[in-house]
Image (cartoon, rainbow, N blue to C red; front, side, top):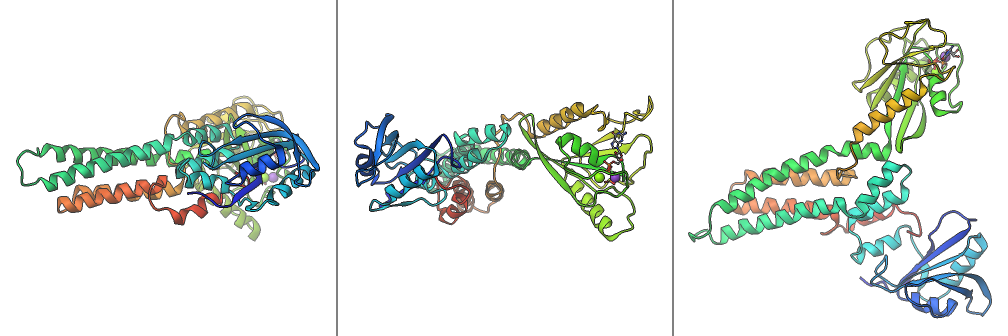
Length: 436
Ligand SMILES: Nc1nc2c(ncn2[C@@H]2O[C@H](COP(=O)(O)OP(=O)(O)OP(=O)(O)O)[C@@H](O)[C@H]2O)c(=O)[nH]1
Ligand SMILES: [K+]
Ligand SMILES: [Mg+2]
């Protein structure tokens, strides 16, 4: 695909900054570079005076020209590294868009051109969006592997196996009358399909881990009124995020903080104390606490060791830690039967608790060595592929069974964008900011 128009955008972050990077792609790129910066050696950094077409100086900066197809988009690409003020960036953009056939880029348009020119497949494109948006070390590690193609390679290899399998079955159909095609060929094909179904099922189990890496490990603090939930929440968040008073029923609504624990995103929620509430507001708050706990990855069940109040049936099947609170005023021996004891007031036990949360989150996401499905889109298509594979095992004729293999391979192709995905592109590229 060759575009007839060229695009330009500020590709670096918010201004003012030390340096602004303005990127351009498309057929007018070389002409624009030569007009405003003079000729430069391809792929080398050159310090130049940038001049507007009327001869006035815009700025001094570094200029880089990557001729297509060996560039990010596959087209001629240039970068201008200029002083990072709003005025300089605006003047460079205004000058470049002043050329015929050059316009501002849409969000994600550089990456979209890279995809359309075959520089990236769809899964790699999604991984690049994840990499650009990564906030934690675990998100970065996960995204960078997929951007390098680990996930794409898995789906491509399954697809290649299916294309091969189908070719074998079709050959058998064509030569069915001849004696020299051994029946064991199709036996081998069908046992490979059985193996592949198991591989896909195992891979699908990893989606939960991918979701936790992306959205965070959900920790919900539960307990009776005045158990010390908000005090612990504030101590762990290291700020006064929640109101603390000695009145039971102080917290009514859910309050969330997002933390980075050892490179993992963790969402911690403070909740209303569980009891038979009298007021309307409090009982809604308690219902929200129960609902939140049902979706938790870990529940911290708090109990005041001075005045333990059982909270009745646990509203969640999630793993839990029983935590005794107010250890600064509880007597010796009060901590028996708890997983951990803490004092939010004295700050004791907090480090151990954070370590325990981080260890549990790390255990759920695994070693990081596995390739995981990173989007619900992948999960849906993998489930469809697995369904076709299961159907292929019980098809009525070899022809119908081969057709199921074709449909399964098609679904894998849709994940990586190897077959018709026009309808998906707007969704996927809208995840990017302008300039990427
Ligand atoms: N001595 C001592 N007091 C504490 C500690 N943690 C909390 N408290 C006190 O216990 C009372 C209740 O604390 P909160 O943090 O509001 O308890 P809560 O569980 O959020 O209460 P509700 O939101 O009403 O359900 C307050 O008076 C706190 O100061 C602690 O570690 N040591
Ligand atoms: K309280
Ligand atoms: Mg509270």
